[in-house]
Image (cartoon, rainbow, N blue to C red; front, side, top):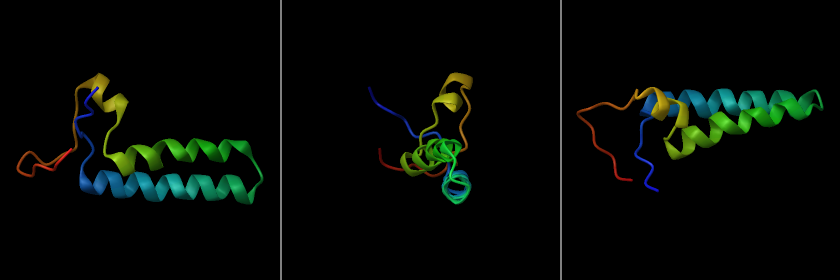
Length: 68
């Protein structure tokens, strides 16, 4: 299965930062809910969002083409 990148550069930066914030807050408050922060971190790191794929949207710049 080929995962075509559909998360742009700024979107991936925001996802990683917010995901890390959620993860750290979960660790600070000793809660397992912090592991939800892994979802945006992973989707930002691999530049692929399955929800974007289902909704057929992309935040990628059409003029920039990145390698898979």
